Figure 1 (spheres, rainbow, N blue to C red):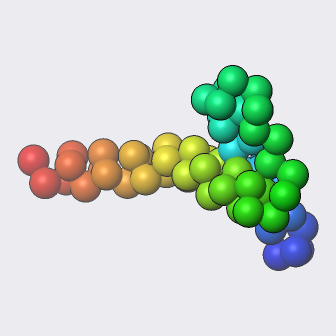
Figure 2: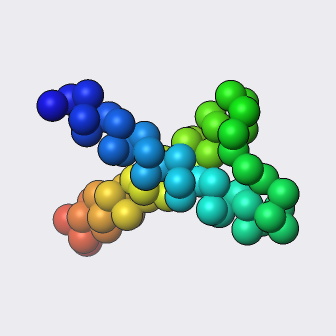
Length: 65
């Protein structure tokens, strides 16, 4: 089960990262080589997990006040 979840998250992060980096580079970024593939996963992962980080920060902010 962990394997399936890892593959799904990895695939989603890659696709999101490729879309964003391709948009920012004017369509030149493909994300196919090893280094570019890794950057796409990192960028996509940041985008995937940013709502959770923002929610946790909001909860901390709310409980402090």
